[in-house]
Image: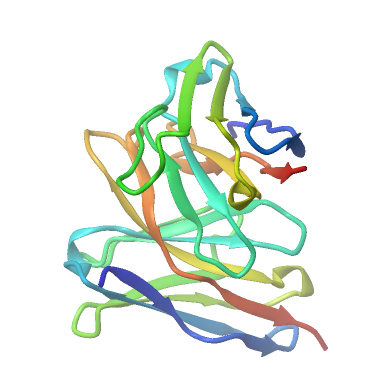
Length: 124
Length: 108
């Protein structure tokens, strides 16, 4: 079964770090980029960045540059998203999403498979 | 960065047609993708590349894109279509993926 299974909910204090995992199954994990997207309460979707599991290459949204680190373990078919210096406004549901598509450039690429999300609550 | 504008809400009676718009500067030159979000569930891709449907998505879901407006049209709306819908593009200038603000579809 093709799916992405994410780790469970987390509660953290401001200033702490969190590591969210996303385990892939049913397809060749290393062959497709994994992205991370979050949704704060009552807000829309916000793109955070991607990792190429095959090479470990990453690209982060400027908003999260310096605070986010995306890694992967191909032996475990798992992607990770590490967010540091947490603030209350980092409270959100964090999704991993597989990128699929065709063509040069990313125009015709889209997120065809998503995890169910991991709720992160940042509160003192 | 590139901005996508969606109406916050759209309401439609069962059996009627819902149209959710996504505005952006010359968005017709982009490839637009649409996602359905229900609380507690994984988001679902419903339209990609402006008007293509993934397998398993009913033909009732269709997309269009021209000029400054892309649209997701849902025909013969059902209660189960009630969800939040997001449009998305890739912004080549910033090399960032961009989402619209989302539209809550309410089935009356």
